Image (cartoon, rainbow over all chains, first blue to last red; front, side):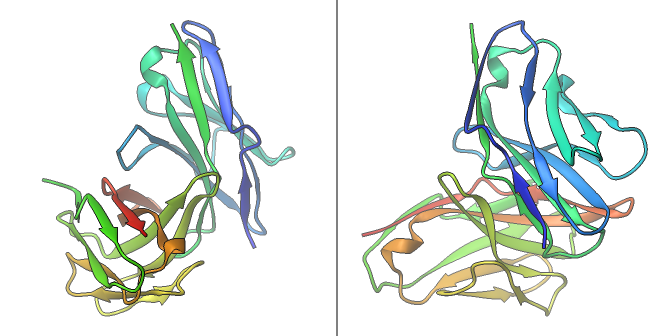
Length: 115
Length: 114
């Protein structure tokens, strides 16, 4: 079985400050990890993914995520937050590649960047 | 290139009514998915179709049926709607990038069952 936990329902950060959105996962095999962002009344948009290789993954809009195997975490980060980053963020995990069924999403974290 | 499109955007049903949610993609993807999104629960997979002509149950299939009409279209049917099916429904499709399927989502259908 695979699962994802996003321990914070809400994260508030001031504009210009660094932000972190936390994600931990559980999977039996090799994890493939994803971050998606959802703006109000829109579908999810892909931000970045970790498959293998460098533990620091860079994605869209200046976001990056750090894979930590020992802590089974994949936290999303950005050095300097923008008000336009305010959205709902989802972490997702897949156990191995190629199976259409096995993408499990976390419950989401609402990020609010305060001006 | 419209990506993944869904109709309708909003729908209100009475308990017991039926309806079909439509989804189409123009990216020539083989795999398509239906999810529901409920507050505090993230997205849960209802059904998926790995390729044209095949469909499989996901995590929460009860009360739903699907049809993969052709490679482009994947519909979700509620035969007898219940208030518990009030949710936002997302369709997605995926392609293989490298060794991993990357999913693309439609804008969603907001369904209320009274």
